[in-house]
Every structure is written in C-alpha cells, then in structure tokens.
Image 1 (cartoon, rainbow over the protein chains, first blue to last red):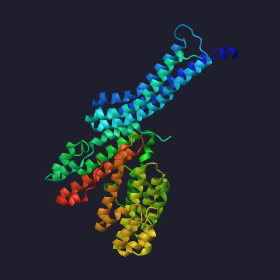
Image 2 (cartoon, rainbow over the protein chains, first blue to last red):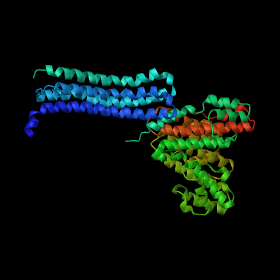
Image 3 (cartoon, rainbow over the protein chains, first blue to last red):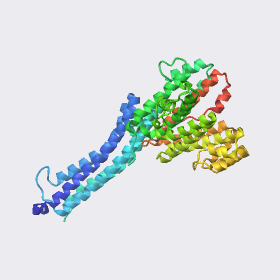
Image 4 (tube, each protein chain N blue to C red):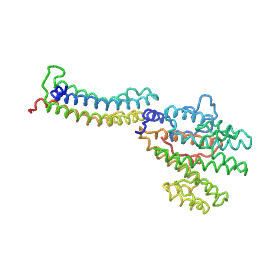
Length: 165
Length: 323
C-alpha cells in the first residue's frame, strides 16, 4: 500500500491540485451565486419584471467555478487519467499541484467578492434600471483577477510537460 | 459570523421605491383640501381597502402593513427590531395604569405595533397582576401605579414611565451592533431628556424634581442638564454642546419642536448612509424609521389640512425624508 502510494505520489499530487482547483473555485462560485440569487429573489418578490436583469448579476460569479473545472480537466488530461496512461514524477506532480493553486485560491476569493459586488449591482438596478450597464461593469471588474489566476494556472499546466527534470 | 439579511435587504430596497418622496409631500401640501389629500394618498397605495376617508385608519393600516412586512422579512430574527416596538408598550402602560385607576376605557388611544399585546398590558394592570407583565414593564408599572394611586398626579406617573422607557431604550441600543439602532436610542434619550428638562423648568419645577425626571445615561449629563434647564435655554444649549450631538444645540435656540425635528433629521442622515449596506439589519431599521417619519409627515399635513393651517407652517415642521 505504502509503496503504491510512493510510486504514484506524482499522480496523487497532480490529482490533488486538480481537485483543489475545481473544489475551491467551485465553492467560491456556489457561495457567490447563492447569495446573489437570494438578493435577486428579494427584488423579484417586489418586481418580477426585473428577472432578466438580476439573472445576469447572479450568473457573473459563476465563471470561477468553470475556470477551476477547466484547470482541473487540463491537469487530469495531462497526467493521462483521461486517456493513455503516463508516467508522472513527484516533481511533475508537485508542479501540477502548484499550477492549480492560482485558480483554486484566486477563484475562491474573487468569486466571493464578485458575489458581494453583484448584490450591490442588483440593488443599483433595482433602484435605477437604466444604469444596468454601469452596474454590471463593477462586478465584472472583479472577474479580471479570476482571469489572471486562470491565465497563470493555464500557462503553467501547458508548460509543465515541456519542463526537463 | 454576523447574520446576513441579503433577501430581506434586497426586498426592502425594492420597497423603498414606494416610500413618499419630498415631491409627493409637496404635492400633498398643495392639495386644496383634506379630501383631495386622502385621495392622493390612496392613489399612492396608502392605507387599506376599508379605511374610507379616515386618515387615522389609513395610517394605522399603513403601520400594520409595515410591521407585517418586517416580521415576514426578519423571520426567526424578529427580535432584531424590537427596539422600535417598546415605545408603544410604554405608552400603552401609561394608558393601562390611568384607565385602571380612573376606571375608564383606553381603547381610543391605544398604540399598536408594540412588543406586547395592548390588551394583555391593560388586563394585567387592571387586575393588578403585575407579575404577568414582561420584565421591562413590571417594576416601572408597580412604581408608576402606586405613585398615581398615592398622589393622583398623572404627570408624575408619565414621568416615571418616560424615564424608564428612555433608560431601557438606551440599554437596548447599546446592545445592538447596528449603528442606526444605537443612534436611534441615543437620539431618543437626548430628545426625551431635553424636552422633559425644558418643560419641567417651564412649569416651575425644582432642581431635584427635574433631575429625578431625567433618564440617567451617558448620552447627556443629567446633573448639568437639570441645572441648565433652570438657567434657561442658552444654558441647555451649552449643555447639549458638550455631547456628541453638539450640532443640535442651535436648533433648540429656535424651539423645542425644531430641536426634535433636527434630532429626526440627524437620524435620517445616518440612515441614508445605511442604504449602501446590503447585508446587515440596518437597512431594515432604516426602512422602519423612514416609514415612521413618512407617516409623521403625512399625519402633520392631514391635520394641518383639517385645521386649515398655512402651507408655510406645515413646511417648517416637515422632517427630511429617507428617499
């Protein structure tokens, strides 16, 4: 058992990275989409005609979960879990693990704050429906940091197979 | 972690749009008579279906609607806004004691929306079962009841209850995490103490009487205030200047009414800042107080219309609105 763990520790580390990327970013999105949904429901109770507008705000923080899924998918694909089995060294496994961290934590935290910003945006649209464009831009700014995290995670995951160890 | 009121706040922000604006109030003031004022309010959705042209019924329905909405939104956290309900309870206690001693019916003056059912207060006092009253009313009831029985002076009874109310409100406000609620408590105490001190001095009461009538809280030094009340308005203004609400001192120089109005405006200014809070109970408290203030303004306009008062008199007394 122990020897199997040691011989597959590279793969385990890579999979742990993929799991964290998907789970943490997903948790962030779930919290944020959930809270924005609650706020949207509050508005809809009083004015159901605003459904289309508030739905966009609710969906804004959902992207981090998708980014996490994407990185998770790329990692498990690169280590051969989806196709032909590959040899993954401990160092490579650790590299995949590190590559997953930006989107795991960047996704988690940016989703939560984007959710808060979306709730504020819902309040803005609720009072001033004509300010939809401006209101949507503010939570969208938080997305920048999720994209930056995704970019670094993605570049790292793509680059790891080319690293000579 | 502090409880978040996301749904409630979001819904209350949507509800805020149905609050009357200053433009609406000006429209009411411009109405030629009482009936057109009532009709305009009805068009705005004010009151209930069966209120007819009775403004008191309309305002009561409006108040009940607000209480119902907040109860629904707060759910299990109903106690969060209790601080606003105690005023009605202490008021009903005064009625209950007086009606128990004079054997009269207090129905007409009962204030609804309290924490405790008015009839339960009235019954407990009438049957002298003070132990059935909630904790915050029990001791003060015994004291006020025996004072009224011994002296026959209703004013003394009122002073005892008002003092207990202010001290209780201050305590409740100091427990609250909400800045709006804590400010409400402080301003209620300040307004109540200053009004009592000035009125007592006007009626020629002595230093000890005034000091005993004032609620002892850190909001204002009651020793200083009671002495100042005897020295005149300027001294009271100087006393207010030593508190955190020093900017209200000038309003008292104009009149006690103006002082009360500025107390309300100070609270409203803080409440407007709470509009951008999307998570705490503060916007709900702000809505409740905004609705109260709106109803105060509507009542003022309607009674002015009934008594054919000048528009300028109404405008002078109107409070700032939340929206």
